[in-house]
Figure 1 (cartoon, helix red, strand yellow):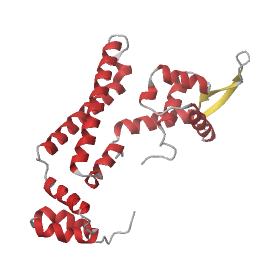
Figure 2 (cartoon, helix red, strand yellow; figure 1 turned 180 degrees about the horizontal axis):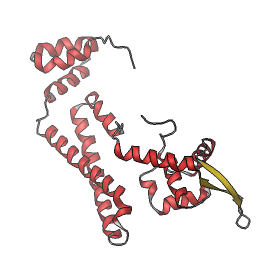
Figure 3 (cartoon, rainbow, N blue to C red; figure 1 turned 90 degrees about the horizontal axis):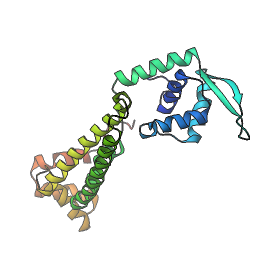
Figure 4 (spheres, rainbow, N blue to C red; figure 1 turned 60 degrees about the horizontal axis):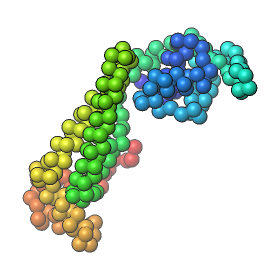
Length: 234
């Protein structure tokens, strides 16, 4: 079970940085950006300060000194504590070894896709597919550019992101093809529901209309969705 405070990967990144050496927040930010970690971990300077403050309150890092460079504002340098090193190790171990359910926004959108007319859904998916392919092209160029310049050890997260990108391209391309060719199961019912909506059919009458036109198996899922649930909301 995840421990309290393990929801923000930026906090883990700070702990990892401080295992290398003591740093002030500005140095943490520049180091993460130099290493392109913002491609994998959401990073902005304001949130970094909040993370550092939280880690300090939890006793995972501690302020060791204040330094000043010329006329620049004084900066507090932090070091990882023994408790922080233990938390970093346990947290990273847990993230790598234990799969958890995540909630990508595109997955959420797909779960709500039927509210759009099929033709509109196809147009939007094709737009997404074009953007994904362009991202893939840029990513490939980036890999060629850094090839041999960086050890593969420091590109593993980029390889993973690229694999996910390729998988999404394959999925969306297949889905668009099924919709274009009329091969997607329930596509005819999906179209008919939107036709009835455009004709002004009331929502409470919609199930009755499609039940008359489609066989029982085709509309079973629709009638199931129309049933009131006995389950209380979670």
